[in-house]
Image (cartoon, rainbow, N blue to C red; front, side, top):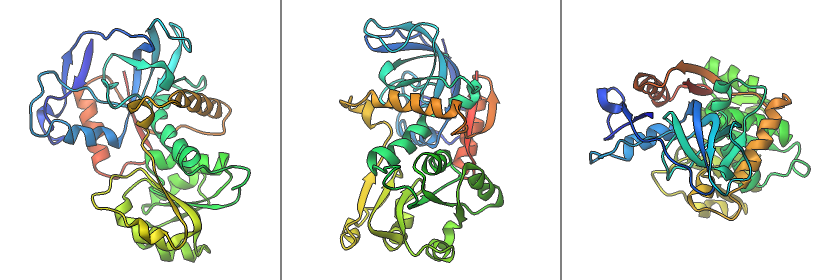
Length: 337
């Protein structure tokens, strides 16, 4: 099968930052599905892994990355019970295994959902990783209760990005929260409003911006950008007994002692935790993806697709990574095979 990968970590401007190659089609084991991939989504985690995973060496076999895909089940392992050959599915994958930037991939059925029937393949390809991340941080980590917490306020740092875009929708449509999102450019502000944000504030002067729209403090904060950059702001803006969640990778420690006076809880979220550690509730990702598919099909949620490239080629992945590395992308990028 054809695949796209790399043998060493190079700047995206380099010729061999991505290469095309042939590799044996994988064989599904007990709980695995073999998927013929139709389209993939590209995420910031992709370029972070590309930049770091083969930094000081040259791999014998190229590394295949990619953690968002939609496709058709071509074969199943002997213990598979959730899907059958021919089913259309979508998923975000497992960071410890071969990625989705290839014609075929094997994936544990317990982290796979049924494709939303109403969406095109490219519209679906961008939804799994960000939906799982946003759902888990809101409902599994912070444990927002739509009945108890309806009407409370949430500040979303990075509202126009991939995770922020769907987090706005979930916080507004499912949790019933008052949503404040950060964005600074006219196009990203407009995007956040279209996703359902009640207010959009500039991240460059956050305390003043939030207070100017009538909020001295907020009940919840979720960070999809840089917990170090905003930490002191979070400490100031969070309400007593509030909750802060983050997916970012801090380069410095955060001072949790600053939260003690307010009895504030802090939560990490990594979408790969369940698959990395084969947790007892790993199948919850299957359940979440099916819930999200239903919400997409009934119109409660909408795809966050913004840009589509056509063709399984190294050049398309280079273009997508250049866009993501700029830090200015809005919504999500898909590559349709």
